[in-house]
View 1 (tube, rainbow, N blue to C red):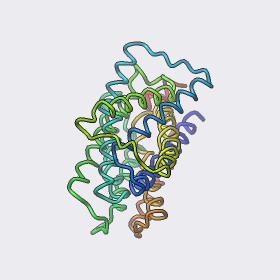
View 2 (cartoon, rainbow, N blue to C red):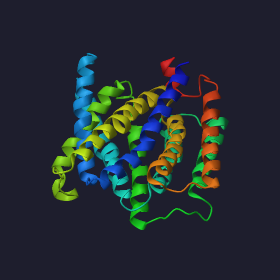
View 3 (cartoon, rainbow, N blue to C red):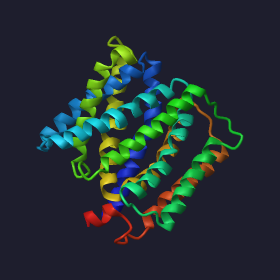
View 4 (tube, rainbow, N blue to C red):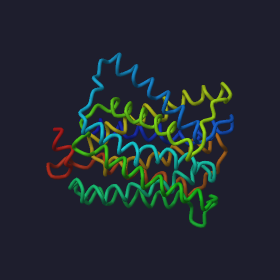
Length: 301
């Protein structure tokens, strides 16, 4: 039952993260840019999460070691992922960016095996293959998706830094911290970095339409706070490898949202790819919770 809860958390996070590209591009059309979106998303997230943790009476105090570790994870994992993804959206369609970003499950699963001794079972290997092949099908054999060199570079960079983030929050030092607390600190760190790095990454645009502000509030809630907290909970329960494979559902969500809102095309290859990814999710959901199968499940049960 606990495993099912973890899977549900990852599915929720995938849906939230999946609609994020559409929301970000919508903000761009309303006058926003990469720096302002990251800043307001982080600022609004910090305030909302602080209020939530205050109301629910969750202690936000951490040990010095935990705080230092979270700062590192935010600095080299969480923040650069947001920056790279949002920059990539300036060069390529949302679906194309998300597709390249999803080389990360293979990286996470492999590194988790060596770093956290998270076993690669037969079902997990099959699920990884199905999800990876599903991504390949969504790109399209001979595909109709336009790719840009800078967009590809930023997308690959986002996959690498997100891998660092996923593995970081699975570290024993912080993996038992409440997800809402972790998300709060990451939002605060992201806000501070954006302000401090302006001479390097560009200035924050404080004069933007009220419609863009409203859209960013919605973006913060639906595609940052909820999925970030849910993803953290999912990783704590089922481990980084399983979580990353299940997260390929985000790609399906992204393409559906891009098709419905932005008018980006959908082909039969994409539909087959989506079905393969869903098959991978089903495989992982029926996998038995054997004692030696997952470090996370055995520790939690």
